[in-house]
Length: 295
Length: 295
Image (tube, rainbow over all chains, first blue to last red; front, side):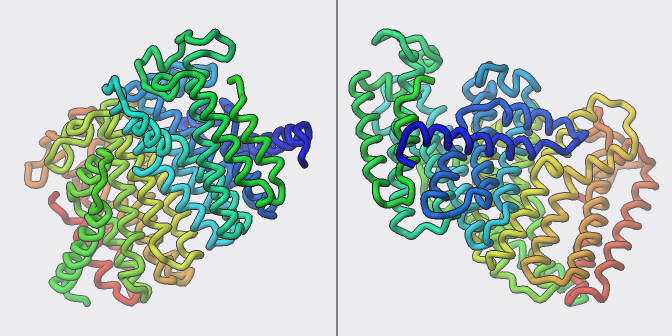
């Protein structure tokens, strides 16, 4: 599947699988109102990049899609919880997320805290209940827990909050923050797919390198889009990060440097998987798409 | 080990094991300040009832203590996270916990949210990394996740918050709230111990009934202690629940009825485990201690 158009079709098909499975978690009627708040943010969409990476890496080492679908969705549940908590008034105080009111704007603060908490628990419930062989489920669960904890997302958000009061951060601080807050879960998504598909150590290593490159390129693109918009002229600072005085890659590096960085990371990602996986084409397609996206 | 004094010694010994293992999780130096906030609440003490139940049930079905210690501590980490979030300004707004400032009073709101989030992740990391056989670790992890999620602790806290605006709740509502918010994790603690020790289905069933009885007795005692204090005369309402206008078992039932309820549940718990487990004495001791405690 080397053609871009086939990859695009395949990505759409996989995203549909993910959407349907995620929706199924909230099918059953419950009179606990918390379910509604959980469903609201999960159903709000987003690019579903993480589960797409999990599914693709599982296929790329010869594993089936069905067996890993719940694990892929677990990564998305965890990602969704972290967005809900990031938006809280005591954190980044975000009123909107994905074009609709953020969870606490819609349901109130206490319910947003609980919706996030419950989505983290649900992530582990779905991953461990996915029917993956027990040894693999345990490894995948540990990978997810480590990415979620103090050395991953939560530690990264801590650095992010602390950096807000630092007007002149080192590039090194941004790397570290980004690595913990964003790349850790992207790496977990790739690794869980590889592990679920029974990857060799060599392939696991390649999955890790790919994930780190794609994760970094993804973040820098995010920062560029926030600072300059998708089609705005150079130098026009209009995004949320700038309003919040937030240091990002786009604020500490010139725009051209950021673009060069993205291109380099994406190149390394592509080279890392070339010939190592059964379907490097799909992995190349995802790396290119994330690097060049306009939203 | 039928004598109370031996059980007391054994409980102290097990609690020490738990304290030492919990402390070891925060041994390593980290420059991420979040660790300090996590450690603060974990080290704040408490009765360590849940890990004690896990360890005791594992022994009671013939399992060893060492293998289940991390799983027992995982339950306590999860309990600690839930207390931090319960105390948040947007929830119960508690200034003190275990005789010291609550987590958000000490570290600020955003860090308290993240400390709780990270402790939930750490719970799963420790449980899945405990070295239990993979099949058992997966079952134990699912039990913990279900107790933590929307049908457990988070759902229970939702009902609790919603009940605050209800001046005249049904006893049935209190049962349900309590079952989700408190009993679910006590049940998980007992079951994880039983499962880790390789319990038969009959013993698992007995563990579940014991947990439900002990959990209910525990909650009613909590409510009584909050409403009447440990040595206050009948009818003196001075506790936090009363100040918050919170409906509890002690506010909807007469004190004598509550005491009778506790005695009945404790009796059933004792009868359920009699003769079924290798060391029913220790389980009886715990049930009695929780029912009759003064703090």
